[in-house]
Amino acid sequence: MGYDAAINKAWNELLALQPPNNLSVKFLADEYAIDVEDRKVVSFSCNVPAKDHAGILILHYLVKKLSGGIPGLSTEWLDFREISGIEGYQSAFRQRVIEPIIRKYGKNPEGLLSVLERFPAKKVPQADIGIVIEVLSGVAVLVLFWRGDEEFGPEANMLFDKSIARVFCTEDVIVLAEIIARQL
Image (spheres, rainbow, N blue to C red):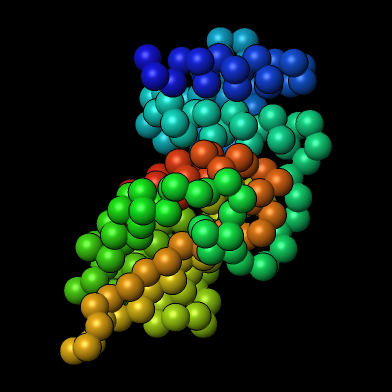
């Protein structure tokens, strides 16, 4: 029930643009069909409705794409703290995004490279392990991981292409980062 108002608002924004009835969007490792007439976002791979939070992101993405287009990637990376409007979210971001990545890959950092097989992603020469993931067409994140040693524990970070601020609001960026962290 908590997402009902946001879902309805996103559908209304999309419908106001008079989109074609059947759209599709690649989101991480899956592709979703958007049935405008029935107001459904469904995974092609398993034929089930998208979870509410993912469906909202997909609808917001489509609204942006159909109303003004998705800006090109800038390849300038922003730390979460550099995104406008995040005041107060930093500890939640650390807890919900960064710490799960560290817990999962802290003892096996090379395991993070399995992302390259599952997502549209590429390895980059940053940190000990750096991966750029194209989350949606024109929306990319950079996941960085540093191995631990006898003095310091492992560390991770997730950076966002600077253009993300022209695609998603701050709350959407946070939800997107959580989805990515869970699927890594």
